[in-house]
Length: 159
View (cartoon, helix red, strand yellow):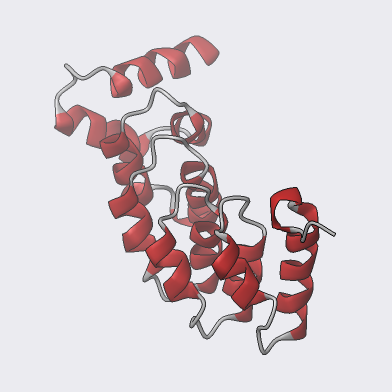
């Protein structure tokens, strides 16, 4: 089975493979292949985007979680996910180190406390955003932000 999965993965990431063949593999491929593609740093951005659109329904959240962690995830994909109505998907975007500051700043106004709390877990959140999270209306968001603030040596006052 592993050699079949490896061959299919190589086929999908090969730029010479016709888009229709890639789409068919993404629609009907086994989970082990799809999750492997989502995690593979050689998977092109357009394949990641297609995985997020065609991934298996019962495992969509897991697919999003894996793909958002891929270094090839593109800003337009993160932007699109940042507007999703499902809190748990916005939480993934909030934690992603490649999420642009503009999206993180917009998340400061997100109705979901979970999204704001997950932002505090993002090591790339700029100090001004983290400072605002430290004064959030929700106590647990403030707690997450305070822990993140204390964990950053560069943010602590020099006294």
